[in-house]
Length: 246
Image (cartoon, rainbow, N blue to C red):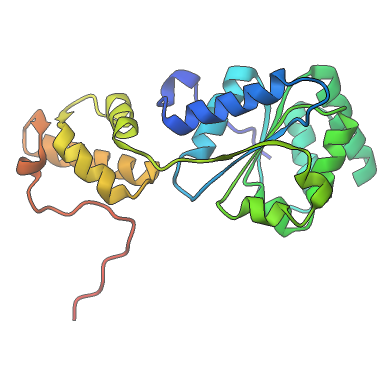
């Protein structure tokens, strides 16, 4: 598997969810020894959770895996060990101990993104086994809105959670951060940015798509700034496919 390339932390906008993600991980890292060491960030797709995970992983030199729907228990462990730079053992039991030992030796946190895929495969116990084998290494789990309900099926795992952090919908302050990070060629005024935020319905991804569309359209017109009045009735991206005209 190709090694994932993580962007430098200074290319990530400091959105609210980025700050919440880092704070949650730091709570797990600095907790008292008698407290559990897992935290979960969950929320709808498009809220910037994975971007927050990349920032947190870079900031604290974490091990970081992004799960896939096809992964089994074995492939999960293989990918965790490859991220750690450890050659996977022959059996699931061997690899579980390897992952736990490496977390204990390195004292690095483990971030598991798209954790709902692990829950779907009924493989949550493997994550718990790695956690126990590590002596309680800090872990940040990230997943979709339904993740806490799915994890409730595993009472012992659910009880090892230090905190549950619901990702927040992107607001105007987040949109300003994204504008300042990505739009360098034009100025998008706040009244148009408010409309973009409203249309996006909390999605960082939709805000980014609309910022790019606005910038490209404004540059094509030869302008260097645009507000809501100048944008007029032109459509913005809602994420919905247009209906076919008949």
